[in-house]
Image 1 (tube, rainbow, N blue to C red):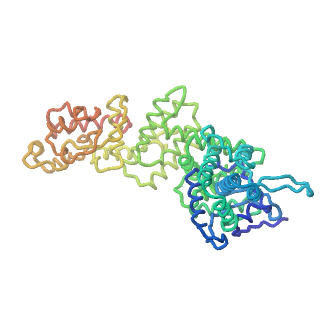
Image 2 (cartoon, one colour):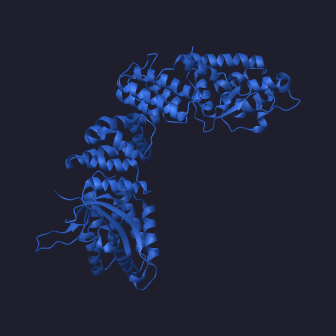
Amino acid sequence: MSRHTIEASEKPILDIFCDKYLFRIPSYQRPYAWTTDQASELLDDIMTACGDTANVGDASPYFLGSVVLIKDPQKPDADVVDGQQRLTTLTILLSVLRDLSDQKIATAIHNYVCQTGDPIKGTSDVFRLTPRERDVDFFREIIQNEGGTSSLPDARQFKDARSRMVENATFLRDRLKDLSDDQRRRLTMYIAQRCYLVIVAASDQDSAFRIFSVLNSRGLDLSPADVLKAEIIGALPVDKQEPYTQKWEDLEDELGRARFAELFGHIRTIHRKQKMQGTLIAEFREFVPTRKEPAKFIDAELTPYADAYEEITDRAFSSFKNADEVNRQLTHLSRLDNFDWQPPAMEVIARRREDPDFILRFLSDLERLAYGLFLMRSDPSERIRRYARLLSSIQSSDDLFADKSPLQLSDDEKKEVRKALGGDIYTVTRIRLPLLLRLDELLSGGSAVYNSPIISVEHVLPQNPAVGGQWLVDFPSEDDRQKWVHKLANLVLLTRRKNSQASNYEFVDKKERYFSTKAGVSNFALTSKVLTESVWTPEILRKRQSELIGAIEKLWRLV
């Protein structure tokens, strides 16, 4: 039985781009992504560290970072788990220096790019770095072959990794071509002799991935999705890695890197159904058993969940029926300042995609639940527990519309929501704007569209009316003013920033100069109804309060 080993050592480039290592970028790795910003920073740092010292050996060493490999100690072949960006950019840099040098120096530099075959041993030339399979031929022709970087194509005709390779080669060539031959020779010597990488080589995949995860937790530019990708696709048979890598990267491209990373947190929640207590990577490994069947996980979970998450976050559900209504519900939910509702929505859309009637009904009730939890001022732990129960109910195929379902509000909860709606809504800061927008859309018959970048909530009766004004005539009692000032009936929406001075205008002036369309304010249904009033009194507020709360109670079935 072979013994697993882990070796770590600091080595200069001349002992890395040598016959002891043949680097291969596995197909499950994300594409080469360094831009000219990173390439410029790397070159600037190296040139600064190199300085003008006559003897390169006297120059300060420069640390380039670490590389994690899966490698048998007795063989040169090494799969790169972490360090693709550095190794690829260094290969581009060396190739550019080679193609700018005279023949003798160029031949010497090419030995760092390509291992020379030995006719006695019967070996052929082999490049020291093999990129992902889809980019192998391109990288060899454009970069690694001698003279490849001398006539670079226009990067704009390529996409993704290939575009980055050409852009960086072009950038580095433009920067280095104006140096003298001696300056380029010294720079190459400095890179080979005084630039160091820490090579961490594990003989088995599990150890390499554990090291990769630790480095990620220490702040390297890796997302949990990168770590999990390495583990999940790395566990596939070699002949399946390329097609499943393509599937994975297509999903990541569709969602974008940030949302793709968020997706894994939601998948963890769908399985774990509790607040995260450890790291995402650790909990994903422990509580998502399907990851142990990589092909099934990608086909049956990652893909449908990614599709659902994209539709939820883009409000772009598509179906033969109810698409507009579903997307309107997703818009209502998206206004809330937490995303706890998203995993249940993902689960239902992924499971019931062929039943848009069910999805619409579910999201309508999910809106009621999500807004209700806010109005009841449920804390995050309470919300997470409620949505966890809902996830379990969805996965058990329970009747989600039964009275006892966690999707539904109990009679006591309905009573509590009604009480909150009748309270000082303005002080419930996290719900007031979403609630008012929902109410405004309801009053408009669903036709309202909110495209303004600024929407603010304003009081009609001001919080601090001026002494001697009409406000104190209509609301002579301090108790009456305090009773109504923060109520739903006294609030309107404006497409402008709040103006503290205008807030205290008398009602007639406020309508004309602050609330009206003449003042450049969009015609919100909530605001328009205020403009139809000639006065603003406690009697008007009581009537308006009853109408607004009645509309919400009917929508959310609170009575």
